[in-house]
Image (cartoon, rainbow, N blue to C red; front, top):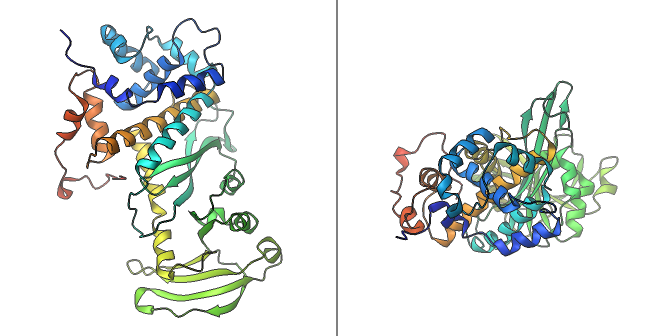
Length: 387
């Protein structure tokens, strides 16, 4: 008697499989493949992310224990550790990168009206980089320091829904400021960055494209004040100035006026100095925009805690990138389900429930809508709620 689809199959129903097949064909992902398709590989790796598997042997043991249910999970081949390891090593990681981008293009419109802390109609991005330490003897292709290896995830996060719209994976030696060269600036959008992206040539390129930026000023930035705007000091603002750069090279690198805002954080009494090319928003709104940049830090902490991107199932560059992109695709897929089902719960709660119910046949809407609401008093002090 048919009792409904397995929870894992219901989750994967939200995947645009026609798009996935087109991407696989684009990169010839299944050339000379007789069994264990790219979709099988994706489903196995997504299962590992959703159920917090620690190794390829762990994945193999769990799925083989449910051998009779593999077909109903959507996996059409026998899962073997060596087969999965080989697929992660040789199949082009760009298949899963492009597929994650297609999921992002689905998720972003769903969160287009999501509030993020500032009443602003423009798209607001937070740009930052996180480093994942590795062993140099195991990952020699990712040099970082003399005796260490690392990879860096350079991420552009849409603050409406905390959806990563751009991710670049590099070795540990690539400086984060170089990522600005790979971005396609969006006119009218705000880019919030810390001082690591402080490069006037690249910032001027954003300005010429019609984009706005907000960043911290370095202490040795030389400038000349042209005009001081009226402020309300009771809000924490110290000054709001129009300036021009007067350094040796900076006037040629950035050939337009800038806005300089000094703000004293009321809780920490720390003084922050911001630079922006936007002269229309109130100064306090600029300070609030920079405060929202912390969401990308929370995003990095969240994916490191709840997805498998710190311990890798393979040691090759292709295997590492494949695992990271499938983790991103899984994160975005859960975000899509959360919005489509209008769930008020956090991604953490949804992932915890799904991790224990992959082989059940409870309807997904019923399973997720019965999650008890968490009271703030019950929340763990280290828990990060992104959405």
